[in-house]
Amino acid sequence: MVDVHRLTKRYGRVEALRDVSFTVPAGTVTGFLGANGSGKTTTLRILLGMVAATDGHALINGRPYRELPAPARTVGAVLEPAAHPARTGRNHLRCLALPLGLPRRRRGPAVDEALAAVDLTAAADRPVGTYSLGMRGRLAIAGALLGDPELLVLDEPANGLDPDGIRWLRRFLRSWAASGRSALLSSHVLAEVTQTVDHVVIVDRGQVVLAAPATEVGRGHVEVRTPEADRLAELLRPEDVVRTGPDGLRLPHGLAEQVGRLCAAHGIPLVELHTTGPDLERTFFDLTSRADDETHTGAGGGARERAGGGWR
Ligand SMILES: Nc1ncnc2c1ncn2[C@@H]1O[C@H](COP(=O)(O)OP(=O)(O)OP(=O)(O)O)[C@@H](O)[C@H]1O
Image (cartoon, rainbow, N blue to C red; front, side, top):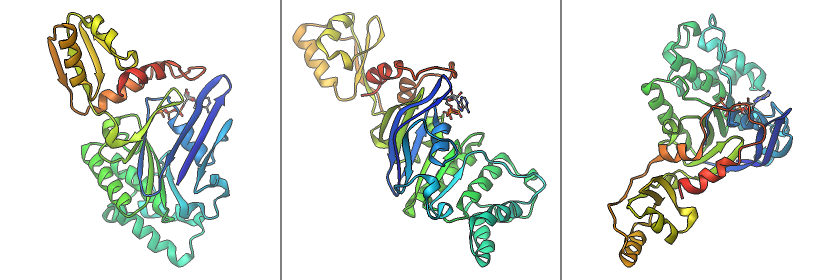
């Protein structure tokens, strides 16, 4: 459905994206995750033909957005939700429906269906200024649904939502995917989306550091404590070892038995050996840098080092 291939974007000296590649298979929900400033919005803008790539391409159904024969029927997007506060939700959607090229007799039903899909029918004739933040988010999604698209692209749809709003969004996306359609949604908070997505793409400083099925992300680790951590580390593959302290090692899921055998064979005393459960949050933190440097020039090579030690 979506094919992003070797996308690079430079804004002057700022390299917002470097060599970003991933796909969104048809009928799946993909979470596009990264800290603030990591390049998510830039990628989505290029995908939607709003910004030109410096290099590479982003295709929807094999074509750039601007060459889609029926863009509104193919993709619905929410990048910057905004609606005039004095307009009712229904009027807002009617205005959005005008340029979509829907036949006149379809416009009213399309607006009604979109309102119903986001549970806003009861509030449809109230001014948007009286809507809660969650309702405004839902209205924005309704706008993206008007053309009855195959693909939804949502930039930070969970931003500012309370737990009820996040639950609503999860339910909505699950039923969207169950109907065989696709979605690509960005978020800087992994926990918001992990229950909802089939695939995870994590970007850090303009580079993809992980693209994997959600079930394979964050499978947990083996935590080891031994006074002879250096000696044990030498017996293991360097790329598997993360030091967690003078006597602590964190190793990839599945190595517990090997560690036990190595320690027994080499007479290394073990103080602690346990396997942690799936820890998606840690995966995300291991793979991404915090948003303390949003004006980086050149995408960070450090991301790869962290990826190497963090999760495999
Ligand atoms: N129009 C622009 N001109 C110059 N730099 C830009 C422009 N748009 C984005 N950038 C820079 O590109 C980088 C990536 O920004 P982008 O908005 O894509 O990140 P993001 O992951 O969507 O972040 P956020 O979660 O904060 O929205 C940042 O360093 C940002 O400052």
